[in-house]
Length: 77
Image (cartoon, rainbow, N blue to C red; front, side, top):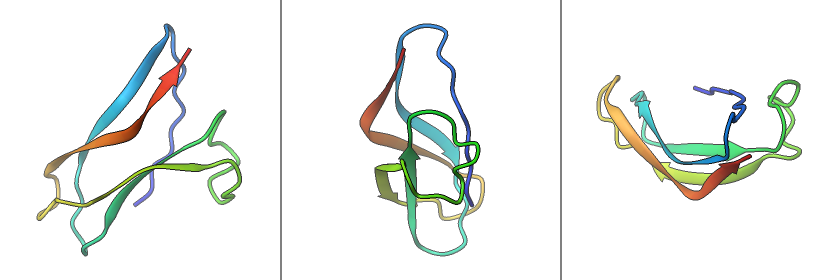
């Protein structure tokens, strides 16, 4: 399952992690990819994307909240 979203900061801030509703289908990793600018138009193009975090999916059933700490905080201005 893939989700894309853009964030516009109103003040300088940073993101250090996400709480997500885990989906359990098969064993695998949760990956967080980042890029400067919008995801619009780049969802099928790997150019400009950077893998920030990859951790094992610890959800054992659908809907369990999983905290994903970012390996590198994402700063916004």
